[in-house]
Image (cartoon, rainbow, N blue to C red; front, side, top):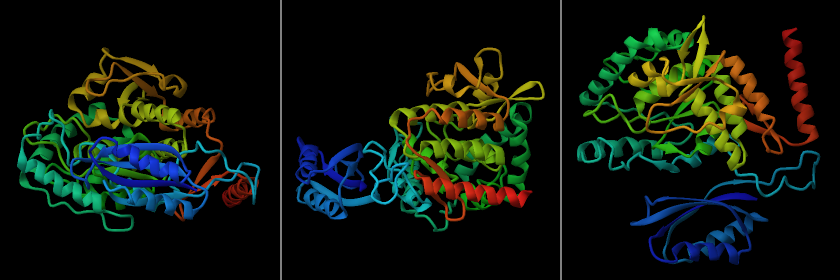
Length: 427
């Protein structure tokens, strides 16, 4: 039984050792551990620990053992996944091995990501333009708290943006809107007017993610979900498998509307959202997400690099010219223009080569990858995914918003029959 536990500890010498001793006492294996500055224990840390236990009773025993540690606060089970069957097995078959990381199986499992952010959110780095602005920090905390409390099935949080926030949006929107006809790909240019018509996109209004999510769902099945800040690559990519995109709702600091050290609503709603309404791009994004489910850490790093050079900083060919489709470009005035000059290096998008390319986070990219089309990029990605080390395949079921693990002969045959039935309908 693969389980993720959450607990908080006060910051003192030997704190984590005491908790890990509890795992040892229960004779369970730990397969992964992540830490964050605590939102529960004052001057402490939050830990997410993946364990493998034989039974549910053993998991409960581990929880009780950790609760006995005096410095621990708020121990709970975040998620649990039973052992996967082996590809050729049925009842009584052995598991796939103990190195398959936990991954969400249904869309509601994404609730486990709600508090697992790497950085930003309510906490700001010292170089953030709003770091020393107490009013901005309080406002951020209000918005982040709504994302923290959101759970699947609830209405998406509505934000009443201030006039100052709208003015920041206006400056960004107006300048980028003027640049798009010259630099953005045709798919982006097709969708943006539809967002203006259906979701109140415009210079004087910051659109609400509830309206956008309904629009995207009608177009491609993608939906939005609020997020506190930057997710881990694994968690972020996993959500794409369910056609869910995590979107921040706070906006950059008003003192510098043309710069942000983090994703904000300008980046998400102007850079990312339009192409999630395009069927071919939506398929490409979901393909990255499906490949990430249960992938090794090594493969997650490769898939994150592919996402970086496609969805974030991708270029494409269009009628003999080069256009931008990456959100990092379409939400940045300077880099959008720079990327289409002769200064950077442009290479053909080939996933096996793209994954080897290193990239800077805080400066313009020295290298960009060019795709012939979204369909071509998806085909190349699918071929690349066959080289991954994952011992099973997955299929997204849009009717139940869940993932089927194709790890047995019966499941593969059932999947093949469903495809055959669909082909007969088309014929």
